[in-house]
Image (cartoon, rainbow, N blue to C red; front, side, top):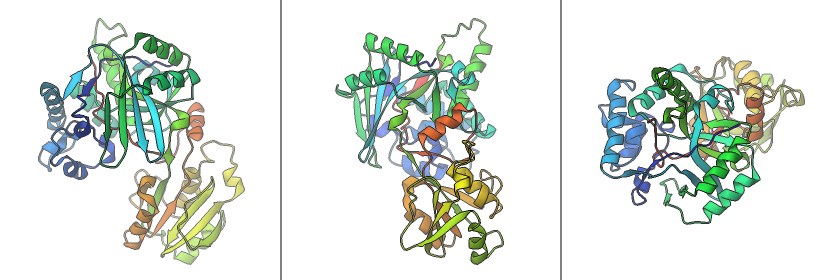
Length: 413
């Protein structure tokens, strides 16, 4: 039984939404964020990555960083850039990238549903990244970046969404990357109650993106509950900011790999070893895989199409049959000696939004020896693995478009 709870969001005034909305904290490094905020004093990166306003030599986990984030958030409120809604509402948030539009409901998910696995996860989290987000939440007293949740489609929910999106949006902006973001306020009590009832009949939610943020929300929520002698369970810290998208609307892009060397082999030896588990076909053009079990290999300015043997594709284990698992087990590990792709510096990951030209550039520059293009993991695979209580290999999914930070803020009290 899933929860979607209305809340009094702090939102940018419509005239400020364009300047406030910012990329999520985890898609930019500090140097990129510093460049992004130049000339943009209202950018929410000042809250999500507050080191941009401090000396570049500062440790990213220094208490000053989190304190600066809290100060920057308070300044946006004091200056009237962010304004709190007068009553608890739900919201509708749409993103349009090219011909694709997806509509997500914005509300609060329940901390205890994170812990009891009503909200299902498919990735491991790293303790250092968890603690960073925990401290950000503790010090700012806010959830400043929404968790990207998905659920199996529900026609009645879709019907209410259709009613809402027929109205004029409260804010409408096109970001520098060309992606359009629109937001509607759902203040009608009947619609809110109906949506809450409908989600109560949805058995599970799934974290599509934002595992570290959701972990932090869960950890801090329980800390607040333990520290409150009068804890009742309905306090704001028991809930966290999320956007709920129907699974059919989500767009998962390929998440490609580049590798520095052939682990002591020459090209001929590598290709021979590869042929034991893959069909290999030379290609005169870039290889963008068109189906499961298909890969592109770029090496020495030449593309090849690789096709995994049927025994690999038809593995009954839902994790082992994933393309990312086949690649990891039979190429990166077995042939290239990359045991843990999360920590091995010889492999890097390139989101599909960057295109195949980026793979060629990384190899042709001499930085990397080879690149492998992937067929995207499907949302059905993600949910099936989460339902089975299993974990996907690292860097299995790349969701686009990314949610923008700053359009909604949820305070813990």
